[in-house]
Length: 350
Image 1 (cartoon, one colour):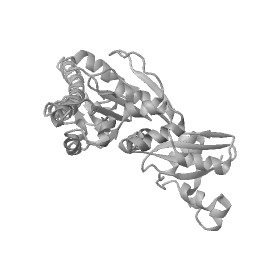
Image 2 (cartoon, rainbow, N blue to C red):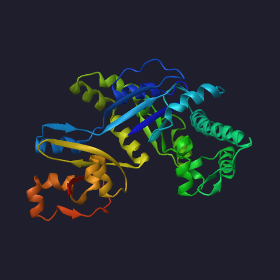
Image 3 (cartoon, one colour):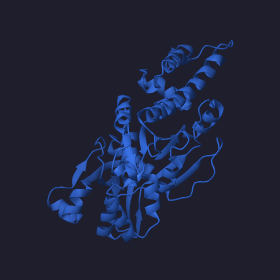
C-alpha cells in the first residue's frame, strides 16, 4: 500500500512523514520525493505470533511518499511535485492546525488550495490531450465513445471545480483512462496537524474545517505530529508518563494507518503456521480466490477451497483443533468475500 502526502508550506507534512516512517526526511524539491516503507502495526499479528511462535513474523507493508510543498501560483513546480503521487492508493492532505492564528478561514483556504491544485494538475493533462486531438489524425474511441467527446467531458467537469471521481463514465471507459492516473479520482483524506495546546482548547475553526471536509466527502484525522515525534525519541516508560500528562490521543501511527486503509478500501487477511505468521493486504470485498493469488499465483490458478476463521475466534479458542471442534473453522468456495482479520488456509490441487 502507498500513501502520498501533500500540503502547503508549513503544513507539517514532512514532520508527519518522519513520525510515521521513523526516518529523517531529506531535502525536498519538485523533482524529488521522500519515500519510506515500514511495517503496518497490527496487534492481531503480534497475538497470533505469540500463539504459533513461528520462525518468521511478517507484517503488511505501507509506503509513505512525501512531496515538496505546494506553492500558490507555482503551477509548473506544483505539477512536478504532484506527479510523484500518480500511483498512490490514497492521498493524505495535511493541514496546518498548530500555528497560532490558524483560524477557520486560514485552514479552509489551505484545504481549498490543495484540492484546487489536484484539479489543475488533472486539467493540465486533459487540456494537453485535447490540443493533440485537434491535429489531423485517425479518430480513436474509448470503449466505443469518441475520444474527443470523453476528454471534453473530463475538461468540463474539472473546469466546474469538480473532482473526476464525481463524473459518471462506464467502467470500460475508466479502464482505458487508467494510464492517465488522474489525481482527483484517487481516494483521499485530511490530516489536521495540531499542537499540544489543542488539549486545552481546539484551534479556532477546527470543527468548521472538519465540516467543510465532510461536505467534500473527506474524512479527517487529528494528529499531533511534532509532539509525537519528540516523544518517540524517549524510552517507552517516559513516553507513557508524558502521554498521560498531555492527556492527548497520542496513537497517531495506528490512527493514520487505519484511516489510510479505510480510505483506500483495503483490508488485511492473515496466514498462520509454524514457519510463518503473516499479514497480507487485499482490496475490500475481494473473493477468496483473489486472496489466494496475493499469496501465490499457483494458489489462485489451482484453487480448490479455503479454510477460514476470523482471528478473534482463533485467538479465543487457542488452536485450530479447538476451533474445528467448536465448528468455527469454515470451508469456503472461491466466491467468498474475504473479511478484515480473516485467517486463511488455501487448499489447491497443486
